[in-house]
Image 1 (cartoon, rainbow, N blue to C red):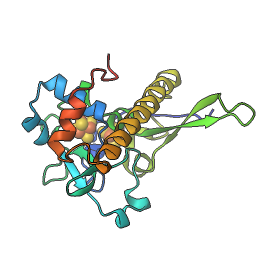
Image 2: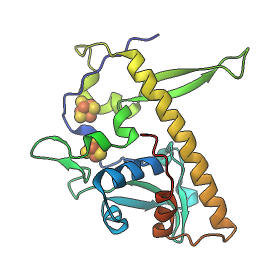
Image 3: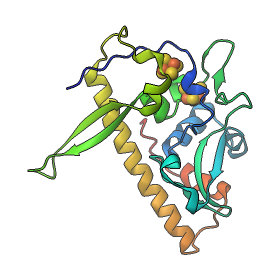
Image 4: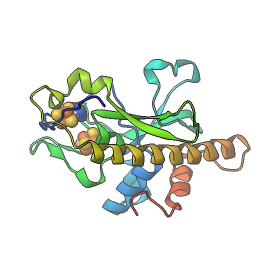
Length: 205
Ligand code: SF4
Ligand code: SF4
């Protein structure tokens, strides 16, 4: 396996990238909501529903979390940003994340990403492959040659949990989008949030 080196220098680059939406899974939303004890109105002050036209969803906008159907069109869910480009939860004076223990999975895994590689001979067996993300390579000073080698077992375990959470999230989004198409739910953001607030398991249990 390739050697990976990383130690976060707390430079804040990944919390201030204007061109990236910090995508949220339904479980991220639940963890933040439960951890901070937020009402639906308060949650709407920290997360955004970023609308894109179907035609403009190209490689540039391709994300691991699928968009949800809303009354205004397809929307990606992400943390809101301040005018400066910093994440809503970034504490600029202390140079740290306000919600470190509750931070979304994309923040937890940065600057790494993970893939499942299936064995050619046995399609039921798969291994986790990890790699540096393009953004990580672009602006994360924590992956320099001077950084220590990572604890691979710990990161691979996080990778497994991440892939499982993303898969469960895709199932929920698919269900929601289908219900919208069939006219079974009103596609408002409030109604979406109420639906996911009823999920008991948060992947943190
Ligand atoms: S860009 Fe890298 S070093 Fe800087 S805060 Fe993010 S993870 Fe840490
Ligand atoms: S949630 Fe925390 S770690 Fe993630 S982008 Fe915002 S400030 Fe940074």
